[in-house]
Image 1: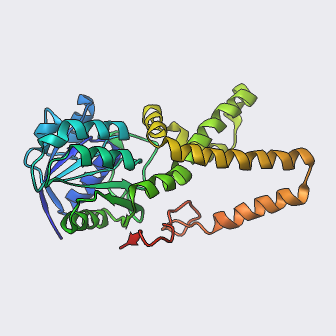
Image 2: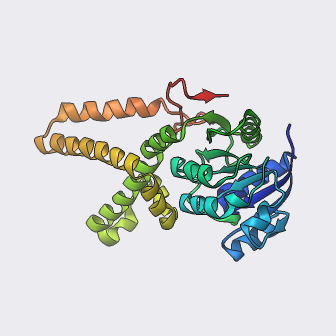
Image 3: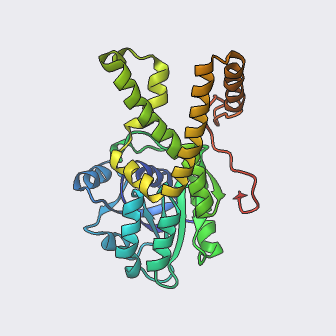
Length: 304
């Protein structure tokens, strides 16, 4: 197993913190130098031993690090490319965990000097909770972890990231950034937007009676508890793919309304049965019925 002597952790929250905990526990990384825009989060990360030392700036954290993990939301990851990229040195490898890949990849390709290698990443696992206090070992166990390397990334860099993904218990899947963004618009971004709309609509219809909603409502809308600022940036960064997903969803929702309005019993039952059949094919690594990721059949996709 390859060992990283020094890891720079830029952003010490749920995803970055959990990766750092997994990698340290496995002996895959040594010293972890952390920086976070929130001084409180940085102190929490140090207290929880997510990081070994605090840095006063991203530049200080990244100095001399073999691997720089940018574990921030998408807009911050793009901004850090402009700020931090030109300061990096040949041989350093950068990765990220943002849930939109194309703009982050473009930013790091633009601002990184020759010899600095970027391999974008996105684990398809997480929680509605955030911050270093929510970080935990085993968060990525059995999850797909998409890797989108820059055109200039070497086999050494991609192999290193794939190895570290496996150390965290996840399955590395290589996917071009644009394909990744279209995929997550359908299976992550659309569900989140749908949950938000469902909460707001139910609140409008039910008012105070919403407190009496059943468990299914809570399960369906749990993800609406996630960071509003993060999801604002995701919608803007992945705008075109999300618009396409919303258009398709709107058409299907309108078709359901037509069936209900016309009292089409057989067609409604067929609709529900079809969705049930598709949903029943999705199982988690624990064998439970869940929405697990299954990469599309495509020659560009290289599961390991």
